[in-house]
Image (cartoon, rainbow, N blue to C red):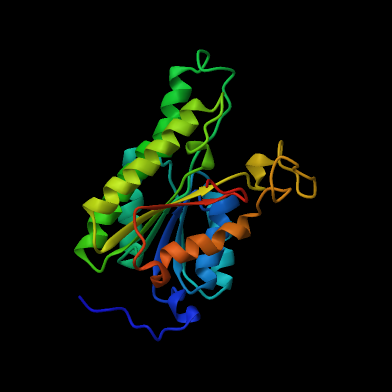
Length: 257
């Protein structure tokens, strides 16, 4: 096996020119920040979410950066949608080098006993079943070609579960576990890693995370901004992490040590 060149600059290591990234939940929040970060680093991007109009709007922004973008409406909890997403991605670009499983849902339940079967199944489908299926489909193709990187966006809730978020925490913990299993299954050419965000300022957190307000419970005294997770996503997507697989990285301003 050839040793990686020790002379590449940081800019070269993080360069995604010629790469194709597929980002689920890519039209808003953390997913949107990752899409724009990858495009700025030179990648073409498949933007998938349930709302096609939002994907199309972001695709135009990516194209203004000089990159190609494919907007696709997709519900990651539906396996047929995922099969179609993969076919459209490969039909448009011929490959996928980077997959980011970002789509997720975190509904609050009154209590564990009051959690409905429908709610439980939806959470598991979007947060675990879908990423498992999509990762498997894409990794099979990656391994048959030139390899690639699969990144799943989990949550520090999977490490420090709280009441009322049991199904969410459990589904994200399952995502952590399956990422390690898949990292072993598709090694050495396909790498699987997990980013576990804490609280971030996004449109879905606006009821409890208001930019500018102090958060005394956190050492950083605030939550994170989506742009602050992009560097972690770039690291796992690029050659800078060529010897990193099966790893979970918390990005929460707190740490887990």
